[in-house]
Image (spheres, helix red, strand yellow):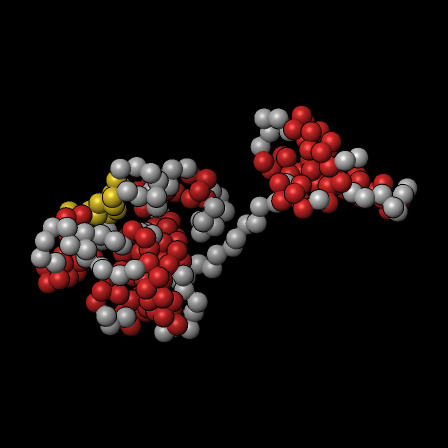
Length: 222
């Protein structure tokens, strides 16, 4: 059976189905062709083995992230002596910010609220809430380092920030990625009893609850 026929067949039987259903049906058909090859005709070529078809119906890979405990995050922040770097780490670990969102300007600070312009969601802006202690440290830092409302608070590139996070993890002997800190913010809130819906909307600012659940940092009851 030509691979084109297999694809046409799948377009019919999977019309309107979810991607996971499509992958299961493709796997079943591929197994059937393998049965024919192994038991009836060794020269038979499984049409599902074409790279194009396998790529189209390849299974999704669930990434299991290591959850960093609060004590480890606290130690990382405590041992980071550079004020700028420590604030960036706290904004991600305490406020759930993405590394690309720390490109804040002086005018984006409104007490405990930070205004994120042109966020990943495609909205005009989003609001991040940070602890009062972090907000106070941020105000003091901006008072000393920013003169104009549109001055960048942290004039640092994405790559430089990523390397800074990596080095911060090295201080305590772990491989630390920027998103690990954002994930920590969600985990800590969950363990403190904050409902997952609030974590999704307020802390992580996800458009869908399913995205929040994929973080794999919540109790199994969710």
